[in-house]
Image (cartoon, rainbow, N blue to C red; front, side):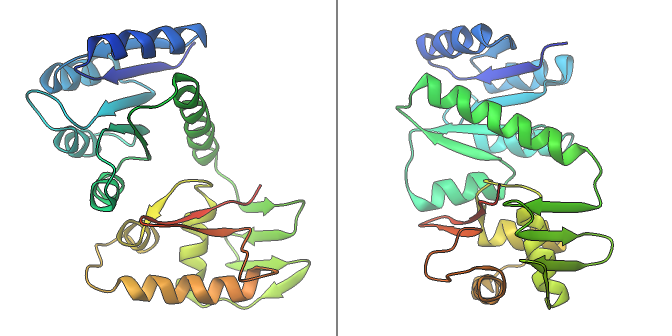
Length: 229
C-alpha cells in the first residue's frame, strides 16, 4: 500500500505542483488549503506524512502541529516563508521533524519526504544496537555501552541519552530545548548551555577531530544533528 501524504497550503498553484511531484513518486496525496480542513482530513485518513505550511488563513501551522502532536507522531515537514532562527526553532520545538523555506525546489521537497519517511520507518523497528560508518561507532542500547573504533567509550548517563536521541534520528535537526526534551522526556527551559556541554564532551569522546566533527554537526542558528551513516 502506498504511503498517504497530506499536503496543507493555501497557495493553490503550489499545492498542485507538490501533489503532481509526489504522485509521480507513487505516493497517495491528499490536500487541504485551510487549517480546519487539514485537521478533518488528518483524522479521516490517518496519513503517513504531513507537509504543513505555517501561514494559513484560519489556523496557524504552529497550532495545527500542536493539535496533531496531541494525537499522533506522524512525521511533519513545515513549509515557511519565514527564515529567522526563532521561527525555525519554534517549528522544531513544537514537533515538526524538519522545515523547508520558500521558495524551494519540488525535487528537494521530494527528497526530504523520502529521507524523513525512511528515518521514521527505521525508528519504528525495534533494535538493540546502532552501528555507524562501518562499525566505527557502535551503540549497545540495552547495555548503555558505546564503542569507538572497537574501544569502549566511557559516557555519563546523560551523555548517553543525548547521543542516543540523536543517533536514533539521523539528520534530524534538534534545537537545544527539543534535544533535551527528546533525550530526557521533559521540558528544560533556561539551561541551553548544559546541552552545549554534553555536545562538547561527546565530541571529545567520539570524534576523530573535534574541529571537524563527522557525527555531531552544528546547524548554525538552530541546533545540532547527527550525521553518521
